[in-house]
Length: 170
Image (cartoon, rainbow, N blue to C red; front, side):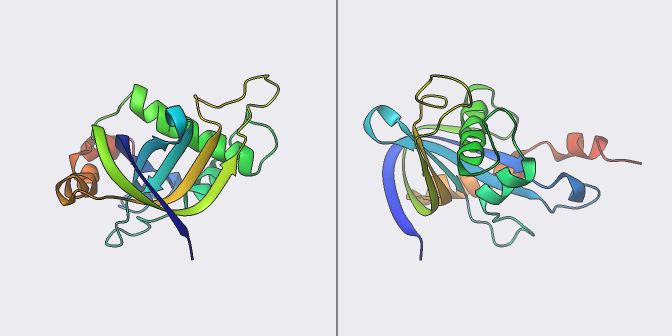
């Protein structure tokens, strides 16, 4: 049974295409991710899938998504590399939002934690954090405000999917 954490912070909600091989003529492989922070000075990253059981494959485990992407540049494949890649994913979504991204300056959230990676360390660097975070908590995230949660659940509808369809093979 996952443990839970909660907090109030800036929350960035964004669509994620996590299965490229299933993009062709299929809604599969898309999910909604939220990025927040907790701890003193926001030193702990929080990344969670917004549960959408109505979507085929809409509730992936983010550590599995990271493992499939096999991130380079964070050392050997494993929890540190995957947690660092997910932290980069959330941070990047916030600083370079794509269509459909929702940024809420302050929102209360709850995370069912599936995995926590502490002491994130970029490979070969003396930095003590990854994008300002030394820890990442990963799981399923819910916003406690029902209006915000409904907005988060609608992120995929706001995404410009016709553009995605232009990328599909003929």
